[in-house]
Image 1 (cartoon, one colour):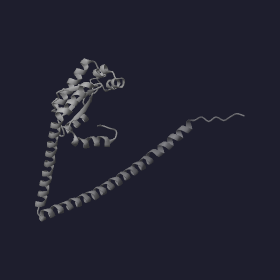
Image 2 (cartoon, rainbow, N blue to C red):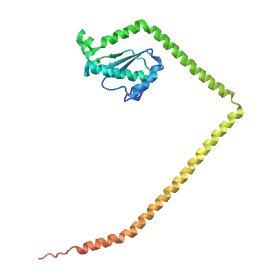
Image 3 (cartoon, rainbow, N blue to C red):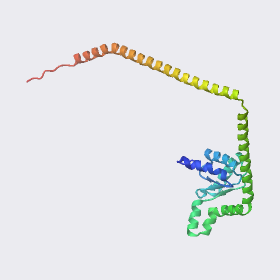
Length: 232
């Protein structure tokens, strides 16, 4: 989301219809943004199973992490989400720990708790979530098709005379717009000509008024300059 390349954001939104669950990553050093809120509103229609993850906790002490998580939880609940838990993690520390096989550091990173929660979901809840998601998609599809059928039915019920009247009205509207365009071009040309004429008049008046004054000023200036004749 918010990528420099628009197609990245578009791909993300296109994928939302295929969601069974979501892992929503927040940053501990910035609050939930408006773009993220809009994305969450969109996700609501695809799945209610969201793992809220708070990353970059290695930049804060334990009390600060609790306060940040509590604030984000309040924001999310105000948006209508039921937040059972926010998973604080440090992706950087987890990467370091896995690189050197440091189990203690890995545990401190918070990643193990998140992995356990995901594993539990995949083994115990996935079937129910997939079923509910499929039902929701089917309902949306049926609703869209019913709306489409209703529109097509209403269109077909319109009599030939009514359709002809609507077409005539549309053509008249187009004609009016074209006439408005021509009128506007005419008015703009008139205003442009008027402005040009006024500018020429102003320049003419300025020339007639200022030229003698400038000439006199130059004459007075040169008359005041002393002339010295070199001695040989």
